Image 1 (cartoon, protein in one colour):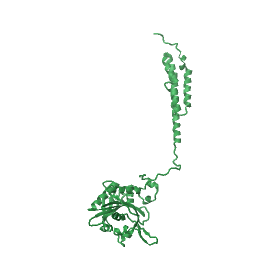
Image 2 (cartoon, rainbow, N blue to C red):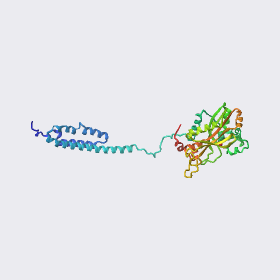
Image 3 (cartoon, protein in one colour):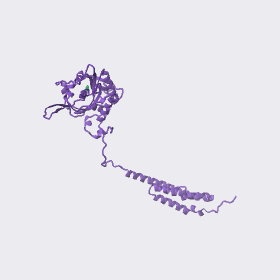
Image 4 (cartoon, rainbow, N blue to C red):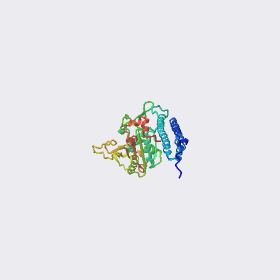
Amino acid sequence: MSAPNNSYDPVEVTPLHPDEVARMREEALSAIEAAGDLDELKEVRLAHASDRSPLALANREIGALPPTAKADAGKRVGGARRDVGQALKARQAVLEAERDERVLVEERVDVTLPWDRELRGARHPLTTVAERMTDVFVGMGFEVAEGPEVEAEWFNFDALNFEPDHPARTMQDTFFVESEDSGDSGMVLRTHTSPVQVRALLGRELPVYVVAPGKTFRTDELDATHTPVFHQLEGLVVDRGITLAHLRGAIDSFVGAVFGEGLRTRFRASYFPFTEPSAEVDMECFVCRGDSVGDPDASCRTCSSEGWIEIGGCGVVNPRVLTAAGVDPEVYSGWAFGLGIERTLMFAHGVRDMRDMVEGDIRFSSAFGSEI
Ligand code: PHE
């Protein structure tokens, strides 16, 4: 066995010379310090801390040294590499923080700046609710009928069996339309959508299955629960062998589709000149389902703890209306209903104040989304 190569002088291996190692270390550290951003630092890492960096290459030389020199050179090179690694890490942290700071500034959005974009409009929720209500009946095979908002008194009252002096004419607070000479024009702003019943019967072949959504007018002051302009959805069926049972079924389907399946409905006897018998339609309160009734601890805002919500009027078409529209009441029968669209919107979406519906503030409509 030959003697260990004690005379081997590590200093003669240039890369391991202390000055040289110190120079490589200094060079790396100043390059790290000089790296201005993360991309530059990546380059510096490749040049000074990768497998091909001068310090890594120097490290490889250590293996060839005699054992006595190994420890010394190893400490020197290892120390330098550790310093470089720590400096890289520290610089990385500083540059990342700088970048984050810069991104925060560059990508800042001043939400108080006036904007130059056009506001996207939103459909009025009354329109979308009216369409949804109409669609329920269209789905059952009904057609959509229309009539004018400025209506002949004959359609609005006479044909619907309101006698000329019948108190029901004044019961509905009518906007009468003056003629040009300030006399009686025979026209009114329709007080309900029921005149469309007569127009549909006169203008269509029997049988008739129609719904008519539209504006209606009464001389009410605008407040939280009244508006002089409101909307109804009229329904009319005239066919052979039509009974109240069909009406109940249609109303139940409507309530199920708009407010949820399984809600009960009830008819309360009422009076309309154009239907006989007549009824007010109530549906079970979809919030408390009647649980709040008679329970002082459980008050329900939706139904005022009544357990029921009134949604409209209905009844069997009065034979006089059929006759006025030229339909033989001996052969045909039918029923009609009028549902409040504002009421449906109020209940279905928790709108508490009618005025929100008429003020035209886009923020109110937008809250319902911009459904098309
Ligand atoms: N037109 C009635 C109203 O406005 C509602 C109604 C319509 C009642 C159809 C019966 C049949 O109050």
